[in-house]
Amino acid sequence: MTLGSSLQNTIRKIIDKFGDDATWYDYSSATISTDDEGYETITWGTGTSIKTIASDHIKIQNVIQKQGEETTETVTFLIADNVSVDKKDKITLNSIDYEIESVGTISVQGYIVAQRISLNRID
Image (cartoon, rainbow, N blue to C red):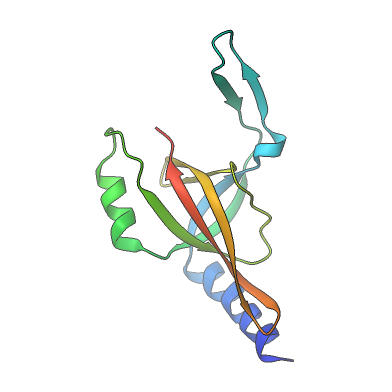
C-alpha cells in the first residue's frame, strides 16, 4: 500500500468518525422552474447523508450566530474523496442550507485524499 492510498483510507476514517452529519442534495437531480421575471425556484430531491469537517471552524461559528442576517460569507468544509459533489449542489448542516461555490481536491502521490468545498449560505 502506498502512502497516498494509506492516507486516503485514514482520512476517510477520520472524517467518518469525527465529522458532523450533513445532507447533500445534487443540483443536477433537482427540479428547476423559472417564473416570468426570470427567478429560479429549485425543488430539491432526496438528500444523501454525508460527513463534513469544518476547515475554518471559527468562521463557521460566526456565520451560524448571524442567523437571520443577510450574509455572503464563504465557509469551507472537508469531505471524503468518494463523495461526488459539484458546484451549485446544496449542503444542509445544523439546519442551515449552503450552496457549493467551489470544489477542490487534496492529493498525495496521485491519490485524492479529501475534498475541500467552499460554501455560501442560502438565506
